[in-house]
Image (cartoon, rainbow, N blue to C red; front, side):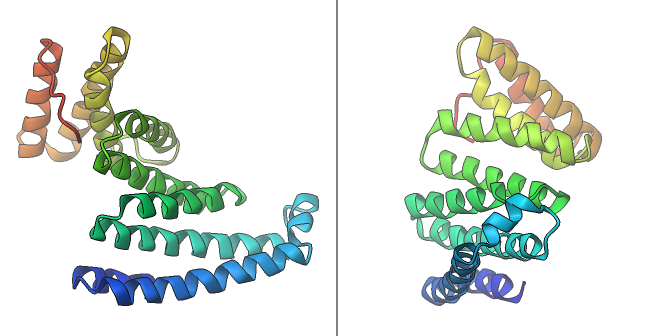
Length: 215
């Protein structure tokens, strides 16, 4: 989308004010559209007829709004406004959950979960980080290539956090790290520097000297 692409360029140029204004204008406009449709009874039509034109139109608006909120979260992340970042992501996730199920919805949901996990990392909320990563892994296993770099990274990152916990949680973490390293080895090659570092961290964790650092 042009507006999201423009906001990304603005963020890269540290032009946060203009990026925010651009996104907020679109966000407010789509919110009004959704509110008007809901007030007119479109939401009830969705309940009665999952194939209605109103349903499709409303879901499209929700999808666009969730994307603009993701971009707004990027602005807040760049500015170090992590509470505002999470607010935007929470609203984006809520909108996605209100949509009918399809491939695009699931992929967008996975993206938001990954960003929420990043937010938890930035705010040093390890419990929330693990929760979001576990959910992202479960969804990723449903919709992603089982040999994807994305899934391997999710498993490894979540495993590192779990491996720092108590015995049962630690065992789960080691298992997740192992699966993640295996996938990354096949995708990137065993001698890739990222894979070598991940394997060394896994070996240290298996010996009881796991890496407890944040993601």
